[in-house]
Image (cartoon, rainbow, N blue to C red):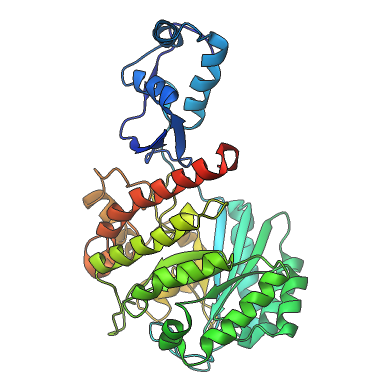
Length: 443
């Protein structure tokens, strides 16, 4: 940091501040890098920047308050304020922007499944992607990636139940390894976990795949949603991949059938040291079944789940896992890659913008023209209006970015807005407590 009277610094507006006893939690929702935790002396210095101040101005005030203060003591503190986006110079003030040098590919291998989960939007039938369509889609994506200079791709295998077609997963990976050059990529399997036997798990380990297992509750609650015996089979597979140190997590889709069980499930997962992510149920556009939770009920039971986390805080940071579509450590204008860097490969080999739109008339990519990711069609433009109409003056607009963009079509408003506003501060407080407990070096 240059020591120059001409350079003035100012505190970012709209900082979220919460007193945590001896410490103060600070969070910048406009340019978040995570939660900052300050002692009261550092917080006093930060508050001096509510008006424009130079380093010399701050030094004079601090020296007057405490004669032991030196420039060598003060400089690292001011530098840290800048690094954590708590203060800025007028010239250096940062702006939020989204970049798309990465791509997410959702491969919907099959509509077949061994379970009948009550909230699943997939129409169960024999549709399965063919070997020829696998190769064709990989080559189409490769040409797009090469043209757009994409640096990283994440492939997600889904269904139906993708493990029913594990041979197709292996084929897809082998072809990708042959065709793709100069691009980093990894693979994730999204599974209900009931087919994770020793043979498949060993292949997953060998292929260096990541695994996301759906778990909707402890035994009774999970089986209510997914069928009798499904919990025992899934948890057995989860313990096996955990023992082999295969990268994995649990995805919990919160709906009105399992919401009351969420605190109990959260406690169970914490005790077993199983990583998890909360997702919110969303009613598919073209279905009549609606398992959406009332917002007040959702807030009530997620808060109870947070109490379980607070009583058994994990050492790693989990704040980005605790609210659906909310990312606390990077500001973003858009909640997901819909129409920008997200592509779904359908069983028939065609593409669409979102896996929730597999059978919908809207959201398809005509003639598999991936240029539409750069030149938005009318459907995609229609999903972006809520940021302009509803979120413009909200302090959390770059944290949740309005939530799922498809909710704009169904609800004409951000679907979980009330939930986000109630729970975002709770997650920030949890993260501050974690930092205080485990030490600042683990932030």
